[in-house]
Length: 129
Image (cartoon, rainbow, N blue to C red; front, side):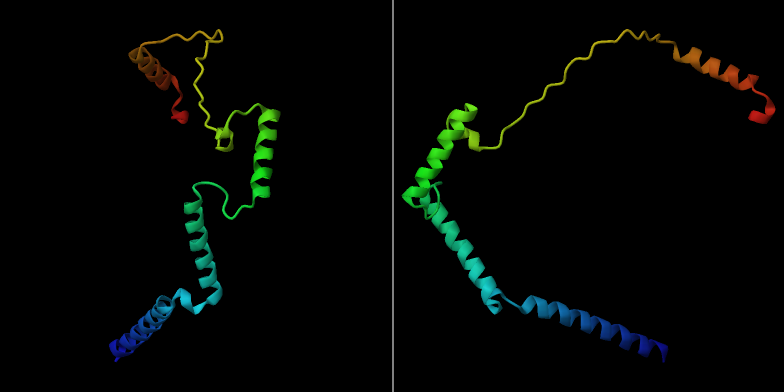
């Protein structure tokens, strides 16, 4: 009796979950016209960008002149040469060798340090052990 009710409960939950998953998977981009328009515009822009050869897409001569004027202005103001300054700069950091500050360190034998620690352990009172 218990097994049948448990089986029914599990089956109901699985069917409900699977129905939700199949409903979401069966939808396509064609259902939403705004989403379809957005995807079409992105594809159109990608095609135009590829055909323009790296220049501005659908740019008027005034826009291109404005861009070249701004690039020349930046070149004069900051001393940038060529179009490479439009790329993100690369930084190279080298580690600096640190000099000692006057701290003297004595290197002791490991065995001596272990013996000293054992002696200190023996010298402690019994209530600190």
